[in-house]
Length: 440
Image 1 (cartoon, rainbow, N blue to C red):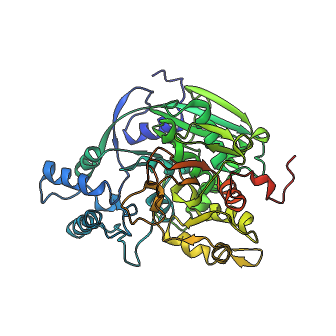
Image 2 (cartoon, rainbow, N blue to C red; image 1 turned 180 degrees about the vertical axis):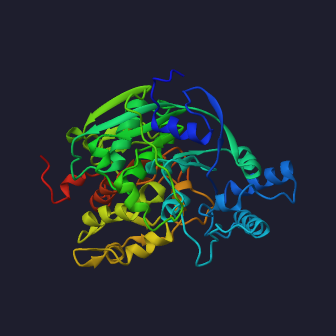
Image 3 (spheres, helix red, strand yellow; image 1 turned 135 degrees about the vertical axis):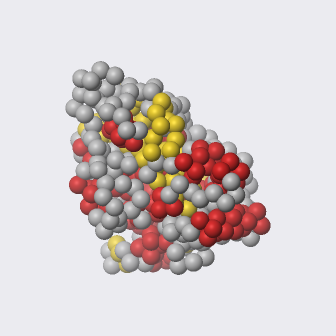
């Protein structure tokens, strides 16, 4: 690599983690892993491979760096799902793992991708791998975070390293103030619709511009969460004071943020005028099957779902409550907080004198436990699982056939604003019709 050529944020993180002065896209390097995350779906097979390859009595490379958060198939009577939890529990005990957050205890946290920031594991400049494709959520904190398979996870358990090809970086810049009726979900659905579900295959997707940097951390997490829906290797936002303020008090580990070089080279740069953004919807059965809400307004629905790592954060529920408060619902509406902390916040955060929990409960919403719940379907008794031929509008991240239950069901993806407006309308609706803001 030419010494005069600067590196992107992603390249700088991987260079430091591999002990190199510089790396370039396409180069393959050994990186030291700062955090390995797994859960109840992929943890047991990864553990099985680890024991087979390193020995049944082998110790993990660093028990302080392995985080296990069951969250997918947990509130179920399914014996196979329950057995997965038993395997995690036994492994955590054998290895004396300090960061195992067991379901059914006060230590339980909920969806791993939202719990990880709450617990202070999403530190700028570090490398995080997880056995879940939405591990890329943590890139919102200026971290290299990406999903891996069970075999790679087992290798990390034994060595603390992984062989990684450095991705090119695509940059997406949002210029100007984002309109008040637009949420981060609208931005990422716009991008995925523009480039397609394979448009960022094995590339970093970096989000920038004053529109993005004005977002809180939860909005940035929504952007990076869905890069995998465009085939991305990782998503990333440069860390700033908003990042540091969020992490203050959540971790006592020192971290060293890195930033883009002024002469960094990108695969491509796309620019958006924030003022031109529209509320977006992804129609069945692909996240890139985009439409503006105006184009699909009035589409028949049978259910609304507000939850998941993408749409189950407290800011997502604050947005939904702004529209739902005082309005009767015309759809079966599910509210599923991502984590136990968010669930508690629903009982504490108020809007116009009422807690969010009371607003949703009085409107007739079905209130769920903190978990992935219906986002990934799961066992037949999973809360909120879609039945035969439901038509759902959801804040989740995928709408493939069968993703939330029956393969004959249809799922439309949208922001919490749009989902809430649709729950009130009974059909796909424009949030601008319900928000006390000028449309412009």
